[in-house]
Length: 456
Image 1 (cartoon, rainbow, N blue to C red):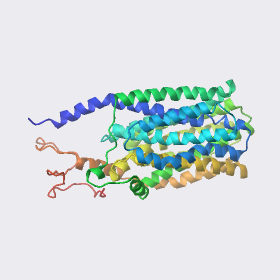
Image 2: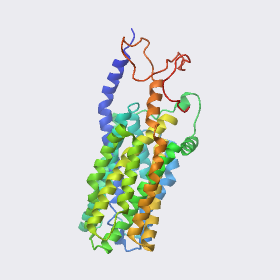
Image 3: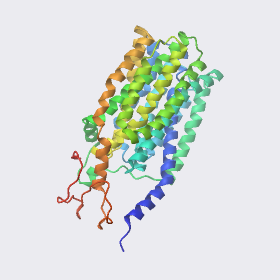
Image 4: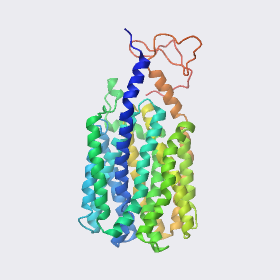
């Protein structure tokens, strides 16, 4: 007796619903912990009594190691499920406890650096897991990516105020607090991984009898202009944000006379618009196009970043609010757009998220070092104008990805198995499709009313 494919599909989706929700929650918590540890030190590092350049190097140490270890993570991300994520959380737990052992600059530099290895594993594994949970459902993927990005933004924005307040209670209190949160996330992830197992990322090239090495995947991705433009957008956007981490604390304390706790609370001004922008960005990307929302976010970030004069606290607050909303749009849509490009042209490999992580961390390397140099050589206002202007100038490059989602939906329609029986009378299919023969090849007698798709 023939099975009903629609009934099977509905049953499969129903069984995946709790897996999806819990999976997104687990990834959200892991990303939140990763970025909370990254930013909780913003009001703390200046207390070491070193110069602006040294503080910038301390912030950049994590990003540098993360970029260096990205090739290693790329080799394992497709085949080990959530194990890299659990490993990354364990390393961050060790790092959090390590910060309490000493207050020397060199020791903190080492502790900061090993966080890079943890972040590379957490982000690559987490984003790939979300993609696998929502494979074939583009709208749900966009919403899910926007949701998990709020974990990153929440960690980025809550880290400074938490760090500032807890640091005044004791030098080690912020790090013990973060260690507790990371330990909780690691236990939750381990329990989830045992209950819900996810198959390794599918390699269509291997299915076709073609072995593709990690190096070949990376080269193919870096030669794809659709991937590169998103990676550069992420690098510029995060360079601007990370520059604030290294310079804004010093500027607010020295020029406006704020205490560390007040500096941390200033970052809260960006919290609400950033979280809302990220969550809203997923929905807006589904409705209007992800490339448009990323472009809008970069223009907003650049314009509000350059807003001045910066010696007025109210102007700084408005600048932070607009910058936060733009950051939410960029970070909320970029992972889903990269997932679309990866599924369309690169067999849905998780290596694309490793490159995403590397691009973000390149921004965290360039931002603090260049921003600190510009601030030291000129002023905080000049630094803001230069970095803001770069984002506005680059934003139109996102036009390159204007047709990605439409092409991906057409590809999915072509590859989906078709029922042998014809549609009921009067019914018009939404998308023209090819008939597949027994070997899975398209029937040459059937045409597709869509633009030509680039061969995979």
